Image (cartoon, rainbow, N blue to C red; front, top):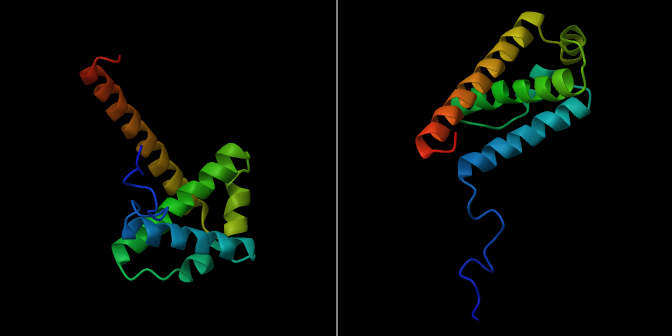
Length: 119
């Protein structure tokens, strides 16, 4: 049997440019946090020209950190607020948005399952 059409392609051939920018920025933010920077200072280091994408990345990274630190490691939000040097209000808002995102995704998945007969 011959070589598959996809053999020899680079690993990231199917990753969009936007996804590459997003991933690079997320790594940069994590590196900054690992060096002891506060959240906003770590975010200042990312190089994203599209302001809408930049804001989305920062918002998403805050939600990821809440998921990892608060939900998975059970670190209280007030401790996280001090560590990241951001307000409790900002953390609470991000947490609420995150929970809404999960709720919306669950509802969509439920109805998609009903339509496809998997429920």
